[in-house]
Amino acid sequence: MVKIKKQDYLWKGKRYRLSRSKSENHEKCSRCFYLQDKIGLPAQNMPPFNLNKRTDVLLKEEFDEYRKKGEPHPIFSKNNLSNIIPFDSDLIEEWREAQTAGVQYKHEFPDGSHVTVCGGIDDVLFNTDTKELVMIDYKSTWFENVCQDSEWILEHYWNYDVKKGDYKRWYKYQLNFYAHLFRKNGYSVSNTAYIYLVHADNNQDTWDNKINFEATLIPANLDPKIYDINQIINNVNETMESNCIPPTNPDCRTCFRESEIIDKAYSHGLTDGVQQGMLL
Ligand code: SF4
Image (tube, rainbow, N blue to C red; front, top):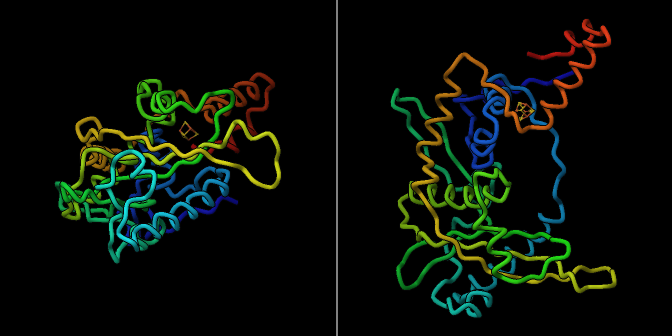
């Protein structure tokens, strides 16, 4: 049986939080977002990405060591960026807590209503020259048959054509979103951000109970004009205040498969079962 979410956790309910990933879901398909956050249907199951989570934990611990020392992480020194060090704040652990805290603020809409907007960060850095915060996110991955050349990685991880809808565009979105959250909390934020990418080594030829990684630092310019998060949140409000369920995303294979199955069922005269199984 489908379990519907409680009212408090739905759009503008007492406990509702618009996280970075939820706002991303709205950008990807406003229909799915509406069904989950207004009507209360459960989200689709996703694999848990536990190995990526483990690399994140180890990287956080490593950056924390340099935070304690007030020194740049070696990858920043290696890239002649010794002026960028982990930001020392008592709030780091709270900012990392995506489920219950994160970096957050109250976003007010023109009609006086509001939602809490939030995001859990991997880390945040500080530019000792400009006194600005610097956004960073850790990513761990593996590509087959590619040379780990930083130009190639830059091309595939940042300078990607956003119009192609590739998931990597969301890395840009993510860092712009975090910059927005910190700015709303009164911090001055640099327009240069970084992805700290760890890539499984293609030259490793034996398992030996370990995977070696190569680390690359990818600098990137944030673009608050393309990623106007205020506007994006206002667009979410417009979707949610409407009584019309938005259309499906035509590129989504799940809905595409469903409509194919429904068509096939109809062609076999199985209309009753299909109608009972259809939610909306
Ligand atoms: S197209 Fe359908 S299944 Fe896909 S994300 Fe949207 S509502 Fe969900």
